[in-house]
Structures are given as C-alpha cells and as structure tokens.
Image 1 (cartoon, rainbow, N blue to C red):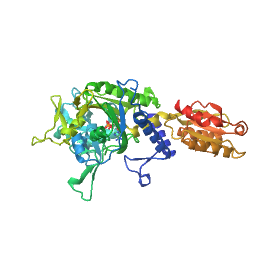
Image 2 (tube, rainbow, N blue to C red):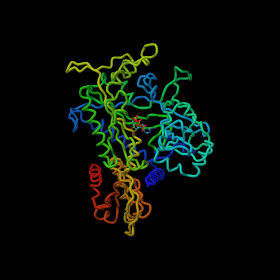
Image 3 (cartoon, rainbow, N blue to C red):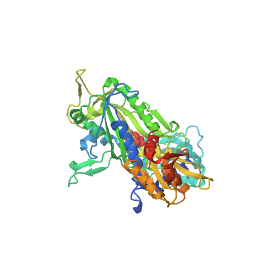
Image 4 (tube, rainbow, N blue to C red):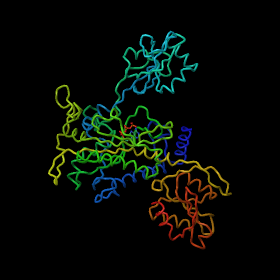
Length: 553
Ligand code: ATP
C-alpha cells in the first residue's frame, strides 16, 4: 500500500510536469533529477517561503514569539567550489566517507555498515549460541533486517544457494547477525554475498569519499584538485568576518543561504530523497556561548512550526533529539525533523532537516586548524610531525561585543534543510484521492494535491463556461488582471467544465474561476474552492483582492 501511494506520486510528478529523471532520453543518470514547468514553481515557492521566513519578512526590531531577544538576519550566496583547505579543516576531507564493500563476482557495491551477516551452521548445531565460531561454517550476508531476512531463508532457491556455496546440506541459519565491519578478515573471507553462489567474493571495506572532485585551471594536478561543496554551511563560516565587518549585524545574528550541494551518494534512492545533486537551505546563527542552548531550542521549535504552517500534519512530522552516541563529536545537541515519507514502512521517518548546536567547532577550526576532541575538549588535531594536521586560516574570527566589552568566539546553531526533500514532503503530504461530482452530478474519484496556497504552483485558473457569447474575452481580461497582480494564473477553455476542474485539482490549484452567463449580466463569477468544492459568486471588480485574501488565510 505504502509503495503503491509512492508509485502514484512519482507517476503524477512525471505526467504533470513536476519532476523528471535527469537525461531521461539517454536512459537517465542515477541520483539526478530535473524539475518540470510545475515542479520548478513548486520548488521556487518552497525556497521563497523559507527565504521570506528567514530574511525578507524577518523583523529585527522585535523578538519573534519564543525568541530570547530581537536579532538580525542576513543572506549570502557563496561559490560552489571553495578553497580545498575549507574541506580539510571542516572535517569533510577525512570524515565525509562511507566504508564500501564490492562484490567481485556480481560487481555490486554495498555500504559496509548496511551488511548484516548471519552465521551458517551444520545440522549438528544445537541452537545454543549461534555466534559460536567453532560451529560456524561461514556467514550469509544481506542488507535486510532480521525480521525481513529470516522468512526468506525457508525458500527453496535460498536453501539451494546455501548448500551449493557451503558444499553441505541440512544447513542452519543463525538468528543473531553480526555487522560485516565487526568480522575479522578471516571471517570476512567466509561470507556469502547477496545473490552469489560462492563464498569470499566481498572485498575488504575501504573508504569512499562522498565529495565530487574536479580541477581548477588547465592542469589536472594535485595542487589544482578541488571539490564540489557537499554542504552550503562552510560558505557562511568563512564569511563570518566579512559579514560582521561589512554590515551592521551584532551577535546574535544569522546568515542564511540557499544553494546546490553535491554528494556522490553510494545508493541514491527514493526518488529525490537521496540525490547526488541537491539544494540546501541552511542558516548559521551566531550567538553568545552562554545563550546558545536557549537559541538551539528556539530554532528547533521554530523550524518544526514552519513545516506545520505550510501544511505538513503533525501526525507525519516528528522532532527527534539525537542520542549521545549519534551526536557529532563537537555537537552539544542535534535534533532531526523527520517526515513519514510514503516510501517508508509505517512508523518510520526520513530526515527532512537537522538542527544542530555546533558549538564553536567551525569558527575555531577555520581560525586555528581542524579541531578534534581530547578529554572532552576541542583541541587542534595534530599530524605525525606534531604540527596541526590541517592548518586554519590564522585569521582572528573572535567577536568583540562593544556593549559588554567582551571578546569571544560565538557558538553556532544550524538549521540545515534540504529544499528537494522539503519539496518532496510537501508533494507527498498534498497527495489525496477523494470524490467529486462530475458534470452530470455523479461522484467520481479524483486525485487532488492539497498544497498550501503559498506553495501551489498555480494559484488560480480562469475558465469561460462556453467558447462564445463574449465569455472567452471576459475570462481573458480576468486572466490578465491576475498576471498584472503577479498571481500565478492559468487559462483553460478546453473540454467540459468538470474535466477542467479535475485537471486543476490534480496539480493543486486552490481556486478556479468560471465566467458564465451571469458574469455578462450581473458582473459576478463563480469561485470554486479545491478542497471544500464550495462555489461562491464574487464580483469581477473584487476578484483579485478576494483571491489574495484567501491565499493569506
Ligand atoms: P542523511 O543522513 O539523510 O544522509 P545528513 O544528515 O547527511 O542526511 P545533512 O548533512 O544534515 O544531512 O544535510 C542537511 C539536509 O540536506 C538534510 O536534512 C537533507 O534534507 C538534505 N540532504 C542531505 N543529503 C541529501 C541528499 N543526498 N539528497 C537530498 N537531500 C539531501
């Protein structure tokens, strides 16, 4: 059922021009997506709603509800390719890597931490402890969980594969898997990889950096090696001083940016959820260390409310605080905003946004050199020669508060959202199937995208009831009035009116206006509401203001 719903959303997204596979006519390219005529508007509306909330509608004179005090917010747009030292100091060069395992036979590639290995025993096995290496003939590996995997081990094909691989029959599959990464090299050599019939086809795990590499300038030499940014955040950290010196901001304040990021994900999947090229909406909020926990809580709650205000239901959205084990070594607290995407099983959630308390890790690293934790404290990480492993800029990035006369390194709160994931969540949340009357008044199933009016790609559609009696001309006038007012509008005079409504419902247009006989005599039109199906008559002279008012509700 869950899969079915997702399939329908993906099909609709393609059919109506929201999202296409990139380079589709050549068979596509895995992990890359294109937005079509409606998708580009939807995504732009998501981006604009975020930017308005962060920057253009932000009032720096008054503290927003829940905020400890008023604060400044500014934006930047920084380059995708940055000085390579940025990524060494930020930790991405060393740490932004997953361990990968290849299957020599199938040429398949797995994330090592996704491989579960179930011990295989002979029939003499008494079931006491299935991790016991003495009775273990080897391991069978899978990327599935215990619950998903064990039922499959009963199947004929699976039993045959096992017998062939281990050269014995009457084998017993243990119920306690071990992680591939936890096995010794000898044990790894006895692993049967997914879909193959001989053991020992998996390579040792090796690091795979997720950053895309390129070269600047004509020479493809090591000195010219550069990276496509894997996050936009570093653009704000390296410009902290510039922004302080060139604008009138005072701590606490935030720097926001929207832009593309790139990660060479090993297994891009779930439509646009995990892509190799994606857009982020990130904000770095610089504050006094003593006030940082308050700001962390403020931003965490405010970001949750942003999604709810734009139509994500609270049943589908959770705010999950990271456990101590999950926290990055520099982080004092991190919470994920997670959404119940339809491609996940019931009760599972996927990350939409992370809100992290990053302490002073980033500014300190860019000032002194890459930091690491020693005895609970951040210190410069040393190389084998005792010098900083990755040198910082050496620039003073401290902040001087001229009111309190205090100099300090600000702490940072970072709400980091994915624009594509947010767009996908809004699309999934909007998808509904219900019934509406057709032209004969009979109830028919309809697909409707219930977007918040702020996000809907088209806000209003104008239809002449028939193609004569001056109706198309009148409808044309109304259409142009909306264009002039900057409200996204569509015009449609093809087919029965019920079909035209349905076409608009399917792309989430909140209001449909029909010009009919009464328009010509009484100067009113019908305005139909996408969700309630209610139709009211509104004077043409008040139409634009009427729709504008309802969009704000
Ligand atoms: P994940 O655990 O899902 O890989 P992450 O924790 O690495 O995500 P962050 O580095 O915190 O993600 O990035 C911030 C946001 O950027 C994420 O919450 C997500 O919305 C978005 N994002 C990250 N990676 C991808 C991707 N490969 N495709 C689409 N969006 C992404």
